[in-house]
Length: 320
Length: 320
Image (tube, rainbow over all chains, first blue to last red):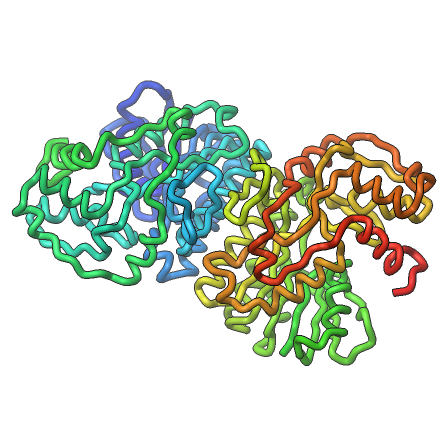
């Protein structure tokens, strides 16, 4: 069996690849990392194959999928602020590339498992206190709209038996290592990561804003779980609101203070950015996760533990 | 101002055209009826322009929309059982043609009003007793998926200010005049229309099934209302569950008995069709319509009145 990860050069793609290569619950012969820039292999392992592919080209997507493809993790996307700024690019990559991949899977690897990375950004508008599994989506960003469109397509392809789809709505991920990106939620990692690296950072949203967060490690555990849930356990919908933890921005900074001290926290200043604030404040901060937990998905203990794990594993100079 | 109706050769398109031409709340200079077969003008009126256009062709869609286009009614669609049988055609017409039209409106008539005809078929799966405005969609047919995808796109195009979108989720329409079609709900008109015309008919679903119905006349009133609601009245979502009435199939037939007698009802026989039953039974039968009513949308009095109106206006030989 071949596993494909799109967005394989990205942070989550690389980390998922490493996790797949070092687990032994799922057997596979090839792991294809595909991205618009050539991915590197996260580990020296003969099963890894790195492919440069433009998912905006249907021919390149078709070339990626073979009869031996048993599992596709579709992580590639234009992130939220970028898709908001470049509407046409967002549609092309976030919708069209997903359709190409679904069509390639349907015709070239029928029935293959297809794990789609969606987002809490599908929610917005007038939200209940607690998001339920049957709360309607109402995206307030083009990124959220595009993810919601793909959720519907993955579900229908699964209902028709073309693929075996699973949709994970990811919480905001914190703490991401590396550099800021064009996600509106980039600050949710930046306000922890930059001060820990001795750098000043600006928090662009109100400290009272509630966030729905997951650590990278927990998201990766849940990606692996997603491929293992029996299809019939999902019921009428293949879409799952992944577990997260509810933390305000102020609480995130208090966690940082407890773990790393006042001096580190003093590197954070506040300057509201209206376009970031508008997008992020439209996302919900609290979910009912009982269905996700029943399906075997997991959550972080608390944000202090998330920061400690980041310091131990991901901070510049830390031992992997 | 030019008004365009796609699906202009269809039953609703023709009836909407007639209603627009005979009302005086909205002024317009041209009414373009577009369809894959050349529509005929429902009335001799110099404002009517009939165009044969394949909406599956982006060039033909672009040619349809001009700078003077102020309002588009997008009714054209592959109906439910047809889209379920021919998945690729459903995607092409129900999603791609809508995208072409949204793009044409965005670039050639920016800000124009865009009324999209969606359907209760977006709902399915585990449904609450009463559908609320914030009940999640969970389509159990490709037609429902395609409508839900377009709802999201129309909403995002409206949020971006590309168009002024309005989405109406239509109840099942009964009683349609004319011939049966490939909609899974075709029987909801057939079990009334055929017996009244002296013909035998087969009911393919359980008499206990609850339907959410609207007469054609009420849907047309609501289409005209949709173009007049102030944009700011919609709030975060441009999507409205249109009012209907809840009637079981058995109650529909009892209405027919009261209005037309036992002899007419004796022309109905029962033979469950599993594929029709599966689709129609996945649709909800009861909605909270308070938001729709606050926006000025209307409902029928009861199903007896719907049948009487059909006999008076639409039955073969009736005076229009």
